[in-house]
Length: 364
Ligand SMILES: *Cc1c(COP(=O)(O)O)cnc(C)c1O
Image (cartoon, rainbow, N blue to C red; front, side, top):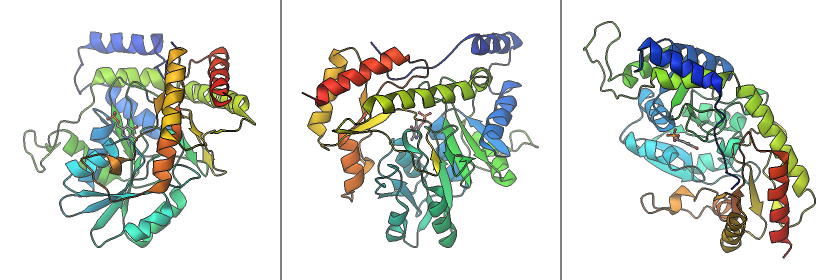
């Protein structure tokens, strides 16, 4: 089986984890956590990093840090992983779904104004499958209407928008280090920001809302969203190879692109002129736009030993979220899209095999 995605783990992670275990600092104190926060936030070009237990808790913590709660509305692209909307609901606010743009598969800035109400407080652009959202127009509108911008960068470590890395392009940026993300800590997440007050508040909220100066005094109702030192030790190992992982993913995307060049019936993933895509999952669209053809391709590849997955379902189409819609661009991209094997350790031979199988399917 050619897997869709897997972590790259070697002695860089193993040695640090052994060192961490030997040190006895296995919970959420210990030197790997501040080291990882510093290294990863510097990678993003931001001043502060707040490590969390996963990407979802990073997003939730970001919303609560900004004071978003009951009565508030938050604009969310309907084409994303459900966690982007769930955290808005967990904060007590309401997600307002909008459609995505054809050219990046991400939140369409033209949909922001029609979605506004007097309750709108924030927008969560998602850098889906590693392609950055169009942050310049999003930020402009956010300034105009005084909205907070929380980036969901869970799939896009190292992606660039106009030469600047994602995470530092809004007010708070959130990452995931789940096992299949660009880098991993097993489970894990991080908020990055340039604002010292939000960084401080997020740290307090992360640790039960407990005062840093006065132990067991709780000025805020907080959470336990802490990352462990063991996870951060894995993260520091991953930081030694993040540039190598990103290079490998660019090379595999280029191999796929060349393989598919000139092939009618499929569209390769976008890369806008202002963007640097990190190709988290290399995803193609079948131009028929037909969900059943897409499902046939998934089955065909599975039988040939190739693991794939369909793109995310538009969130507004699933029972707990309920409309309104329709959002035709998201619905069409979702129904016609399939993510191909994208692990950083994929060989060119494996890629060529996937390409020739897709060609065989499309040509029959
Ligand atoms: C993975 C992911 C998350 C959630 O991250 P976890 O670490 O799994 O909680 C949120 N948003 C998007 C777009 C994701 O892909």
